Amino acid sequence: MSPKFSALLILIILEKAGSSVTPVVTFNPNWDKIFLYESLTMTCNVRSPIPADMSYTWYKDNNQIHTWQSSVIERATTYNSGNYRCKGTNTEISDSVRLDVINDYLILQSPLYVHEGDNVTLRCHYHPGYSEGQTIFYKDDTVIRHLGSDPELNIYNISLAGSKEYKCTKKLPHFEYSGEASIPMKELFATPEIKVTPFPVMEGDNVTVTCHTNVSPYRPETELQFSFYKAEQNVQRFGSSDQYGFQSAKLENSGKYYCEVSGRMIVKRSKELNIEINELFTQSEIIMTPNEMIEGENMTLTCHTERSQLIPDTGLEFAFYRDGQNVQEFSLSNQYEVQSAETKHSGSYSCKVRSSTKKITRSSKELYIQIQELYSQPEIEMIPDLDIERNQTILTCNTIVMRNDIELQFGFYKNGQKLQEFGSSHQYVIPSTQLEDPGNYYCEVRSSRNGVKKRSEELTVGQQGVFQGGIQNMIRLILSGLLLITCFLFIFYHIKFIKSLEPASKGPTSP
Image 1 (tube, rainbow, N blue to C red):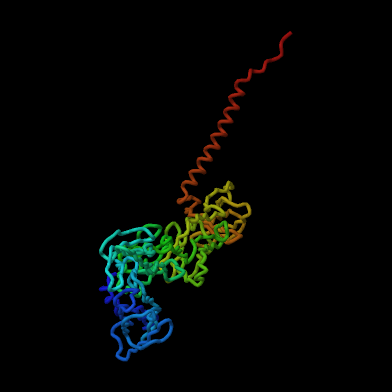
Image 2: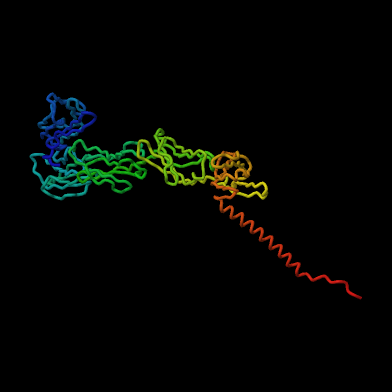
């Protein structure tokens, strides 16, 4: 850094908590070493506008020395060597800077503040009044510029690795002098740290990832660019924002994130931060109680899930579906009940869970539920009474029992009026008086175990016992009668035919 650049260091500050600032000590000329009897001005710089009543306090080696903003050292002596700090009214105290006053023939001067990325000028300075000779510059005892008349060495875009020992020599006809210097390098900005808010992160949260770094208080004008990565993939290109975010976080947003900061051709990368998106609640599961369902029993379906222990009071709502159709809207209850289940309630059931406050929804797998029948749908049939004199007709209520432990009861109706109370008999005898009065007959069957009741279709009976509505039953009876007569005639004629084949009996033989 050339001495001309030193004026740009004026009014530099480091902002801390609240309105507190830290002043900066600058030298003019901007060298960390000077010869005996050379002059130098030290200034305590505070951000403008400076209050009119601002006062300053200077310290040398922790001892208070004066109270001016600037101090001019005329004809410096070795007594002026030391560590200097300053403080303004209501400000923090500045960082310490070192001034060395050298009594020698040759010194290697470097700027007071050097940051990575700077273009730095080193000056191989010969004591005033002596003639200068050829200059050689070294870095770690290796020649980097050989024999030149220029006493300054320019280092471009210096890196932290460049903070090493430098040396210069001046060759005169009969003498050689040398001076050494190490460059106390400062970071232009700190290695970034990636942070996430909120923490911990729950699914549905609006997440902000921040790339945090501090710019050197001596380079507050430095413009930085920020970039973000997830699993080595760039998710936000370099830009002025130090934040990256996503709305309504999902589980797939989990991963290892890091950021990069770029400024003045310097790029620094943060450590990785594993951001885990925590579930508000686990995958839902639909459970049936009891495990097997028989018609007539009460069925309870439960939509089971577990809330995150991080937020155990998460409000949840539940809904239920059968064959994809909603059977219970979202509510606070995680149960769906069916009273006295029927076979029509069989199907594929599923449930959904959603957060009351965040747009998070999870669906369970489907559970197929088969409601087992106790007995089949009853059928009412007519059986004519073989006793023609009584002129009676018998109705039977037929069903198929699916379980051996089921006891059934039967009831009969005519035109909606009960003819026979529920009982164990599945038959009803129609009196002859009723046969003269046509009507619609049906039967009901119920289980004594849980009261499941099923009804047959209606059967219409006309006058004289003719079933107008049960033609198929009548046809079956007629065909059965014809078949019986045919079998009887076949047997009769078969026997008669066999007998006709037997030989005629012979009389006694005469002697």
